[in-house]
Length: 219
Image (cartoon, rainbow, N blue to C red; front, side, top):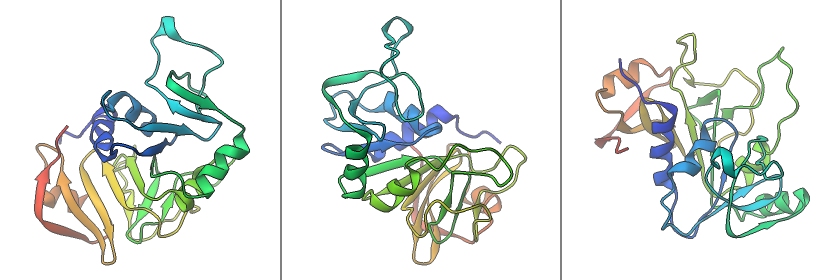
């Protein structure tokens, strides 16, 4: 079974970004979305460590060690970028000024609740900004693998890991499909090239509704 690469997941996720949006990209897979945003699209990327106007990842010769995102990756900045205190950054998030946040996740369930900040028994430094983002952003989109490295399902009836947020996810983009959260649970909207709705359903723990107009993911 052929599934999408992380880069392909992010190419699809970039299509969620509209002109004029203020967007926050989470740690992990979502950081790659920055490389797929069309240059003509007038948007601003926000990083909760205090940057507005994040650009694509820099080439090796362009790296500035003083410019990093919340995941401590080196970044570039676009003309007009600004820098500010972390408390001001979180005030933007909590004040509802982020149009879209794209986050990674270890689990998500049919109610739109997600778990992406810790696995019990493993050392973690803290939740970071995820809890604020899922409660403050206007729209929450997840980019993730459909199955974990052991082949276990990650789209569940109910999350078993500690929650980051409850009833907050709008859309999930995986290496197999695009799925929306509705009042009735998971709704399959798009499938990856070469896959079928039945394959997606077999790899999803919770019941999966099929949109009558299911399409193939355009990358």
